[in-house]
Image (cartoon, rainbow over all chains, first blue to last red; front, side, top):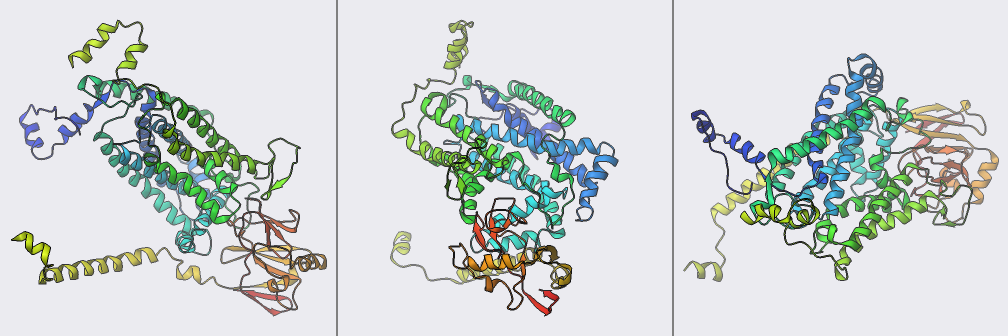
Length: 438
Length: 178
């Protein structure tokens, strides 16, 4: 933690404990952490994500008490036992299953915040890398959790993803066998996925501790990207940001509850209401929405290993962002050109997501057939995803080259200045005073 | 003094160096020995491996029909090919392919009406469906790979022809897979 401790033990017991385990000091200083005073609502997703992780762990522990991790029993234990017989089982599973989607919604907004405002830049590279590790762990956890109900989509999703790893040269087939524990996806696979699905959230919690630690060394970035220069640029985390975060979490819970109570099957696939059958593949396999862009990249490349490299690269490049983007200006608020490329990048990810949900030879303009190029008609979903994937990757190249010719807008001297220029109602002199005094 | 010592000649390995190397090697060896069972337990268990071979009665499959049977928990196609399908497969023997193979190499001599292949698409493992696409064979619903009437990959992302399991004809009407 930066700054001297503000905690002074007042009673003999507190002094006694403080010299043995300074846990109260830790808590007090944590809540007092100096936080930039200009953080906007995009900075509330940390608290929202903490809420999501706790909600998933609590509901997950309860569901594990009623779940039967066997090929014969899993589907019945979820669809009949938990959903119909266990008291409030429908609610707890509704929270857990939709909670995964809510978690990813929040994590994507959190990551886009980091990219838009350049939060990953020095000295916060390790913070960014730890966040990326959490994201990858989340994808692994969500994938394994999706397998557990043992419906058709669970089974075939597991088969496709484990085969995907088989495309890795040399070690791929061994990894696949170790995941399967047999010749194909089967009971042993389900058992180990259940074990790992229970383990990984606690690994995520541990990495979150490191993530928060790495945050507390340099402190928060902020929308201007200008470093905190004095104490007057900051406010104590509590009560200022506990209240702001609390309000944002409340809004998030309203959205969450709306889905759980009124649209509980909004993200569900009909095929997953059919028990897993290793002899029948559903007509149209799609992953959950949060993995669709990567799925579209996989399908866009007409080669098995190439597809896997494309998929892995799309994630690996996000890890590498602090070393790709060398611009001296942190926040895209002052980078009008970068901002446009960023907006199109978000659009490319959304287009890829749409493509991933469609059949590969589906037509963009119905009824129009043009000509085949690399296995697919030009007017096909595959070609839309190829173009979108190309831009997805090109964005990282653009971000790397942009500082050579980019014209940036002037960056304010202090993170406080734009606040003053916006607030016309506040007399400039009065608002300036605290900063001057500081 | 100390400076000249470290720069001119490297110090002789001491007994302590030897003990350090020995201790570290022993620890690494022990750690590997402990880790191996924890990794190897993930491999298929003996009772899983024991489901190795099955026999199948071919009289159940009429001409032009196909059945999907389960072998080692994997789907296997047993297809009773029509003369037209065989002729089409042979005609394409020398067409450009990703994984070139003649039709004769994909069936047993004298039993070329029987095509027995693993029903997992070599791309990502979905089960292709017969009768789709321009080659008269299988179409994979997941990512659109097309196989011909010899189950050879002709188009799409799959890298290989559908795999042939080990099998032998016990008689004209009975086959043993595995």
